[in-house]
Image 1 (cartoon, rainbow, N blue to C red):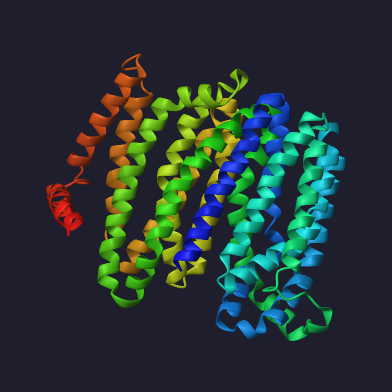
Image 2: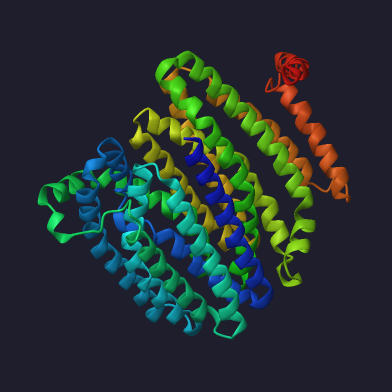
Length: 472
């Protein structure tokens, strides 16, 4: 288990670093409009990579984990189930490029469509490896592919091939990833002879719920830039994407914290429901408190961070990052609640929460972008995530007979006070505003009862025990 966790952690950190490195290079070599086009294509690329299985990846993982001997039959049926879906999605992407994209994006869209063909096998192969608890093989292939995208992208753009050359590199690397998985001795080669009508019928019966979760999850994660490419100019999309790259990097840390908590959470859910509820309430409260405190610091440092990393033409990304980072405070709580719903076999409640968030995101993106332009667009994702978290908390309160919703609302009220101070013009110096915001945050947490004397006592006891424990 620790080996799988280490592989997952290295995969997430490595992919984030390599993807950001490519974006950083392109931000210094492409125009802002070209960067917006790249961001549109990249979001479409990542959004559709797992779609060919139509959400059936989780059932596939469960079956192979429970019965490893059926891996050959299940993987063959899954591949021939996903292949026609990949062809349809790839064709739709190519036609989108031909009919709707401007000239510079037509060939990249076509290449993106072709990349769906090898993805119909890679998504099945990765599910089989997860089911067999062989995360290291997935980590190696994905990191090699990301490294190849970075090196090949630098070469293609430096040679003047632009986005067409860049996505030709992406297509070649998708093919290489599929070939690496075919050569993996742990993976059976798909065979048409193993395809069985009974298995395909089972897929059809399970399709509705899992497909809905897969589609809503993929769309919610990537739709903002795709939708904004229709509502705003590609130049504005490039600026927005520069901010999202930084906010995505910030989300990685709390996401890993949620993964660390997951084994304890799952064990307590099955063995001691009362202890689980206590851990659950404490984790939600402190993740929110610490998350918003960190977000306040990023709000203050955003202009410096953007100036340090990006070219001057992306300076406007700082004001967007200041708003988007507020959503990072909610992400870890959202993921923890989602895993809780899955552990409780409440997939429909999970789907309801995601649909609520997605509907809010689509409406607010259109409204804020229409009335406020680029300045309004970043307000939609944190607001949509807040709606999703509140829906999940309402479910948890009813499911576990806890007061978790009230606990979270008190922390959110304290955070709202601090955010209002941080964004106000009460002082011209941002450092002074940050200090005032932190002081107001601490006072509001105390006033709302979000932080109690018992918490300080617990912290003091832990600090007093720590030296003796280390010495022992």
